[in-house]
Image (cartoon, rainbow, N blue to C red):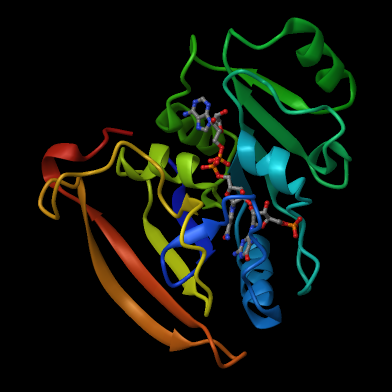
Amino acid sequence: MRPYVYLMAAVTVDGRIASRTGYSRLSCPHDLKRLHAMRANVDAVIIGANTAIVDNPRLTVRYVEGRNPVRVLIDGALRVPTTLRIFDNSAPTIIYTSRRAPLEKIEELRGRGVEVVIIGEEKIDPGDVLRDLYRRNMKKVLLEGGGRTNWEFLNRCLVDELIVTITPYVFGNGVSLIEGEGYPNTEETPFVLELVSVKLCECGREIVLTYRLRCKNKFTQNI
Ligand SMILES: NC(=O)C1=CN([C@@H]2O[C@H](COP(=O)(O)OP(=O)(O)OC[C@H]3O[C@@H](n4cnc5c(N)ncnc54)[C@H](O)[C@@H]3O)[C@@H](O)[C@H]2O)C=CC1
Ligand SMILES: Nc1nc(O)c(N)c(N[C@@H]2O[C@H](COP(=O)(O)O)[C@@H](O)[C@H]2O)n1
């Protein structure tokens, strides 16, 4: 068993979530409210190491009323600095890392109340992460990027709903919503996307697309 997985992001018209310099503040105030309402609705928010390093996010609920989700970081090499805001104790934080992680860093973080879970030899299987979160009674989680982490989950059919806000910008380069090895055509994807809704954002210049993902039978993960 695993939690239901939402993937939420703001993209430019050319599908980038960040520019080549790492700039990613694409959401307007209403879109941020939507993001924070989603955070308040889920049990955990998951990010990858680059997002943690580049954005130094809080991952708390601030623009709506609601409780903070558990913050989950996936960092195979445990290369994030220990000074990040997600280690500030304003909400629980769990790190999933591998046996490659430096022991001193693990000890330091554990000493500061961060839960460090060693899972895997090098690469972390996102299915293992979801199974572990489910065992901790987490039934709904939000994947908040970045592109590489999105690919790791999506490529294994581990995303149930995709909520993407298209914002009125173009970067021409940078980080894509999904950053992976890619698919050669529209047939060879492990999933299909079913359109659920198209909404104009309250700010007036953005479009919010919601898709449900259906995993093609032969790719269904047995978790
Ligand atoms: N506009 C938006 O909505 C958002 C934009 N961003 C932007 O995305 C950018 C970062 O994206 P990316 O560079 O693609 O990196 P990322 O944030 O997806 O992190 C990738 C890293 O996470 C770790 N990781 C992820 N999955 C792993 C696994 N299965 N096993 C082991 N380690 C794993 C690895 O260290 C990997 O290099 C940032 O600039 C950030 O600002 C991030 C979230 C939302
Ligand atoms: N939905 C969305 N829209 C954007 O424009 C974004 N830049 C992001 N980024 C995500 O939000 C995190 C920042 O969170 P805090 O404000 O620090 O709580 C960032 O790290 C990305 O995960 N998302």
